[in-house]
Amino acid sequence: MLGTLKRDLLLMVSSKQVIILWLFYIPLLIFVVDSFVPEVLYYMIIVFYTYLASITSFSYDITGKSKYIMNSLPISRREVVLYRYLSTFIYFAITIVYAGIYLWIINALKLAHVDYFNLRAIVNAIPAVMISTSLVYPAFFRFEPRIARIVHMVVFMTFFVGLSNISMTGEKGILKYVSLLKWEHVMIIALVMYILSLILSMQIYKNRDI
Amino acid sequence: MRIIISNSSDEPIYEQISKQIKGAILRGELKEGDLLPSIRGLARDLQISVITTKRAYEELEREGYIETVQGKGSYVARQNKELMKEKKLNIIEEKLAQIVEESRALGISYREIEEMLKILFEEV
Amino acid sequence: MDYILEVEKLRKEFKNFTLDNISFKLEPGYIMGFIGPNGAGKSTTIKLIMNLLKKDGGSIKIFGKDHVKYEKEIKNRIGFVYDENYYYEDLTINSMKSIVASFYSNWDDNQFNKYMKEFDLNPKAKIKTLSKGMKMKFSLAVALSHNADFIIMDEPTSGLDPVFRREILDILYSVIQDERRSILFSTHITTDLEKIADYITFINKGKIVFSQSKDEILQNYAIVKGGLDILDQDKRREFIGLRETKVGFEALTDNMDKMRRMFGNKVLIERATLEDIMVYSVRG
Image (tube, each protein chain N blue to C red):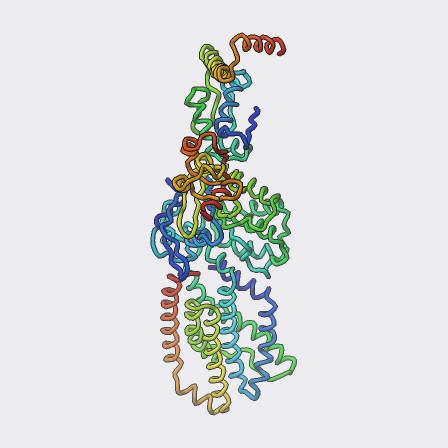
């Protein structure tokens, strides 16, 4: 499985598309999500970067003929799926480090007032990442990339728009929202969804023609 | 050692090989105890299938020309001098029988053949 | 282990095509050529063997074990080379190699570097800058650098020039010097196989036409050529494939002796090449 991780990381740094995404998405978010509580902006950056990194590398994997090579290597279908679900957390860690540095620089250069590390936001981001990816991963295992990407877009837009709206209602709104749902409950739901999604994906992929 | 095979000949390749090795043994070019190329090495050198070389060697072993030791390779077997002479004579006899048949079919007499042989033996 | 590969009654259904009752076996130490026209089912069969496609029926055993149940263990000992490059274009040879190497427990870097030198490939080159031939050589280097016992090649030489193809054959001969290893080589360029193959499996329209030793095939199959006057309905039925022109006929038979007995001196009987066999069998 480390081989698969190596591949994803190497691909990320070799693809111009991905590099551009990583470089410009933060400023884009800052620009679009203006007048935000820094914590919320940070939260959104963490969630969306992790989600996008996970989905992009997955998409790469399935599109094109390189899937024939990867699946001819000594790796079982189960491991392919398991790796995908574990990689989410790796991208999560990478995002925290990357965003931390990037935002710290922005802060230091006084370009904007942003948070570069917020533990509460990170903790709240975990279930959001898990829920969104658990919805999209099985689609990628089951359908052609074209169709799976539609599912991804739907989930992405829903989350993006949903979170933006919630944030737009201002500080009061956020705090209200956060206190309504206890983190523990959301986390349990997220965990259950994630595990169910994993099992579903394994079942789908076990019987699929590559 | 020299083995040359023809792809365009009607004779099966395995037969060409065993014939040439037989000839080399009978002429004394290959002596008792000499190691033959491995069947795989030979297949590679001649660019043919390993099954072909295997078959050639199997035939040679069946007829007593070579011996194969598991793990080591194939060696020229101890040739009984009497037997060798007999084998050589057999080959010539076969060829002569062909000539006799052809002569009959073409209407050539024994006398004419005798003449031809005389000239040929004097030439060589 | 009796066989390195055992395919038994393999079956796969698609919308417009069915692969049916595919059975053949390959022992260690031999090369099997897998021939057939385009679309016959060669690639499909190989993908089924590698579990890239899921079979609808039959069984496949590699190294004596079920190919799905022991998938990872088996694939660790298989070197594969596919048609076209499916490697990641943006990565360098070295990057790609380090990814692949981490999957195999018997990766041999020295061996790989030797091949890099022998094939004159630059390890720092990006895969997209390689020509088709170079990509193929890279694939082969990877396949041969982890002590694989079974090499599977799907149309590895199509699009490559004859000089190149000969080089590949030389390499395959080297591989097969080790009698524990086997090679399965699918192609529609039969001249490559005429030399090196030990066994030939011919597939057409999703079915196995024959699976035999190459020597046997070339011994029994023949091209019969003669004048139209000696043909009649009964005789026509004896052939596998027949081509009639204004100046005579040319036909394929799998029983050279029978033809000699049937026609005697009235026809010319020549050895059939694998290409003849394939073309006449497919065309009819």
